[in-house]
Figure (cartoon, rainbow, N blue to C red):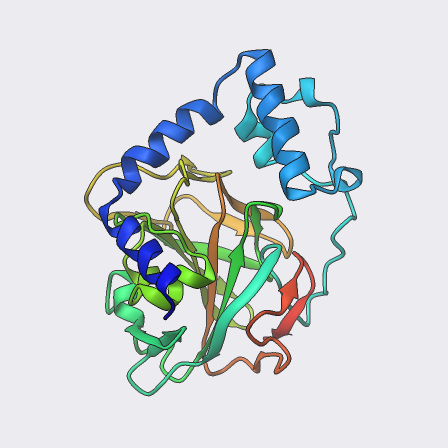
Length: 282
């Protein structure tokens, strides 16, 4: 680890991540036309946003900056891989991935942590023993809606409160098990190919995680919160349906069982991916 990584890590340990995130969140929801349009224009220039992909290019169509940040894309701009593939749930960069070890442990930038630590429960250890996982990092410039990688039904969702460290490459290298320490929403699905789970990990300056079926998920409180859909309400999705959205750069971890074929070998660290493209086969 170099000096700058050390400094960055020390700063983040001392920063009030939740306070900063909520403060920035208030600015992101400011509806003053001049303020929000200025923020959007600066963001477009700073991150070279490809406006030809955006469904609604007019800035006045967005009531606040966050509405632009979680903008929709034009129909068909992200072709889907097809039913015989695991589609990427988001635009981003592969940070890590591989096969879960015998004790269902994941590895990220040299750090190891258990699936139970990530999920906040040991309930799914046997389900994913010797399974596979893939971690995709969404930078601020990326499209920030998260989509279902295959046809499935949501059966169980959990919000685990935690820290809000940044999740860029520097931080994941420096801070042990950052994904199992940050605030996160875990979605457990059932598909024709078997179960799979998606973990939406919050990060510094993420004001919230939101879903189209349960609304604003974070922050509901300081305790683990669960939603069970085994009975009553049914939430069925087809490949490509939106399941959530972030309100700043963050991470999606997809976990599949050993019964599925797994992720493509070329999905290595640093590989850029786009929502809908094939990550592997179920």
